[in-house]
Image (tube, rainbow, N blue to C red; front, top):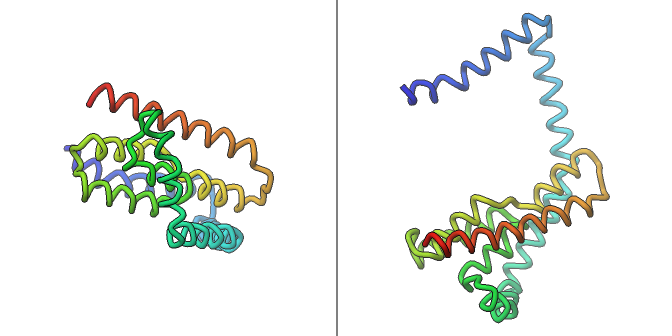
Length: 173
């Protein structure tokens, strides 16, 4: 029964949207084309932000700066209780989803998904966001350049989520 619902939900939603537009007298095809044009304009507008982020991530990983940060932060993270193995994930997650996914893949392949580090990395990956990427995309698409308060709040919530994740995993694992 659940499989039938999961298969039918998307066509049902599309049909409902089309029916609602028809009832309201909206030219559905024209509205679709207008939305697609706006999407292309937004994509072009945010392209410089995305290119800058991807280049910065490539330079960061390729220059071994990540390894330097891990070694510099190890004494502090050991004191706080953050395993050294998840530091790359902690550093990369706010910057890049694909970089963080690579870090999680490395953790899973070396330590396994059932290890403390594997469970911790999985929860961290699922309970956090790529802050800089989403900020650049969303604010860049509408032309907002002053997002310092948003960035501060997002980074603070990210740090809190790291410590809560470590605490909960430590208690439950």
